[in-house]
Amino acid sequence: MRYRDVELYYQLSLDDVGTKIIDLKTTDPISAIRLDFEATNGNVSNKSNFIHDIITKIELVDGSDQLRSVNMKQAQAAQFYITGKMPYVRVEENGGGTNNEQLILFFGRYMWDREYYLDLAKFQNPQFKLTTNIAAIRAADVDGYLADSIKVTITMHVIEDGADASKGFFMQKEVYSFTSGTSGDEHVSLPLDYPYVSLMLRAFTQGNDIDENIDNLRISCDAGKFIPVDKKVKKIYQMNEEDMGPGEVRYYLTRADDEDVYHILSHDPQVSVMPRDGANIVNVYFSWSGQFHIRVYEADGSTENTAKALSFIAKGGAPHHTVWHPFGLLADPLTYFNPKDWVDIDLVLHQAAAAVCQVVLTQLRT
Image (cartoon, rainbow, N blue to C red; front, side, top):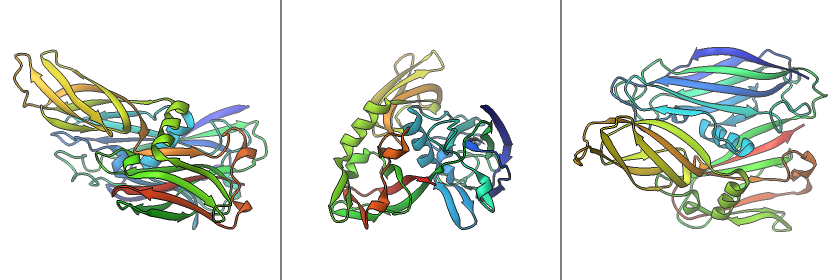
């Protein structure tokens, strides 16, 4: 086999608010698409304002047919669950600093899968769509992102020679979203068209673990004739960490004393913060649910009220407040869940707290 990395665009400028539409013309088998986003901070700082907040939707479409439709948080979490490693994330909070976050969209079971890949020759008008909102967290400039600074480098990983006849590709979509309540079940009717590879649940409230928002997940086929999963969400998280291990991220912070810091890894995070100026002393006051409270002191023990440069590492699970349920063995499509065996498939989520909830389904589209 021969492989080729095609840099479709290098640092293509994206709109501050809007959707960039990119035509995909290649007929080579696409194993994966890598997206490398950068954006520049305003001249003061840019705290807890991440690129995955301002890239609000990533789509691959063929006319009205959606082949992939997720936001950046969902895409990064899915990459972690497929590979067991966090995507490349380098956060810089200092004024004028550059933030860089990446992700890989896989169309097969793994990179360079010779049987399952995206064959654009089978579609009439394939297009890539990237939707942005630079002010999703804070207004542009000063203590947000600098206007007109969002850029993306797009790399297609193609199989130049040696691919087998395509057996299909992985289609991934957000199939349902809602705001949860404090009790009761939310019922989600799942599609019946293509085999299920995995289901990902995201349930986000700042300060809560995912299982404090949705505490049980059940899938019921034909009114309970077959129940492939019925588990506490906390136990799903624990299985995820046992299977993939914890993820790790590294940030460069700009912080003074007595501030809250937020990061991607939301469950059971352990953090380490180091001053980049040897004259400072740093202490982390508790770490939970993708956040921690930081104390910064001067060498004489007095509180540091001027923001200082700090290095930060976190280890933890449930990236972006998600859990992942695979259907069978990723390497063996014969073990995937076939929805065509059933008339109705009901996802039942038991609510425990108000949260932004999203259901993402990965299917093998033949």
